[in-house]
Length: 240
Image (cartoon, rainbow, N blue to C red):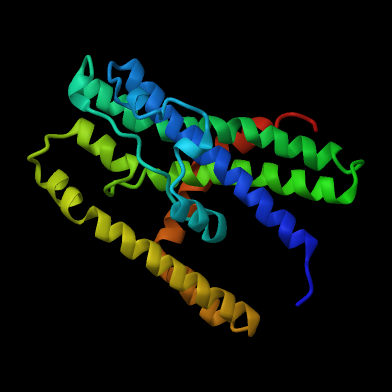
C-alpha cells in the first residue's frame, strides 16, 4: 500500500480543526457558567483553552474520522447560578454561539488561502486550504448538530432551561433523547456507507435512495445551508 502524503495532510488538518472547534465549544460553556455564578467548571479545571482538559479520546477520534463526535461535558451545578433559568439557558447556548461566531471568522481565512495562498509551496497550500475549510465546516456543523433537542446535546439543555421539567415534551426528550440521537447517528453512518458503495459501482439510484433516507444528514445539510447563508452572503460582498 503506497503512502499518500495528501491523505496524511488531510488527517492532520482534520485532527487540528476538531481540536480547535471542540476546545472553544467546551471552554465557552465553562466560561459562561462561571460568569453566571457557578465555580464548578473552574474547580474541575475546565476554565481553560488547553485541549487536554476537554478531550474525550473516543469522541475525538470519531469526529476526526467520521464527522460525528463529542468532548467531555463541562460539569456545572445550576443551583449556583445567580438566576437559575437565565444561567442555565446562557450556558446551554454558549457552545453553539461560540461555534457560529468561529464559523463567521474562519470563513474569510479560508477565502484568503484560496485567493492568495497559491504562491506557497504545494504541501503548505494544501494543508492550510484543508485546515481553514474544515475549521469553517466543523464549526458550522457542530453548531447545527448541537441544536438538536436530544439529551445530552445543547439543544436539550436549551429546552430544559425554557420549559417546565415536569412537562411531557421535556420528560420524553430526557428519557428517550439519547436513544433517538444514537439511532440517528448509526442510521446516518450506514446510509453514508451505502452511498459510498453506490458511487463506487456507479449505482446512483442507491445513492439517491440512501441520501433521502439519511435523516440526520438531511437535517445537517438543511441547517448548515440556512445558518451558513448569512456568512457566505456577507463575506461574498468583498471583492477577493
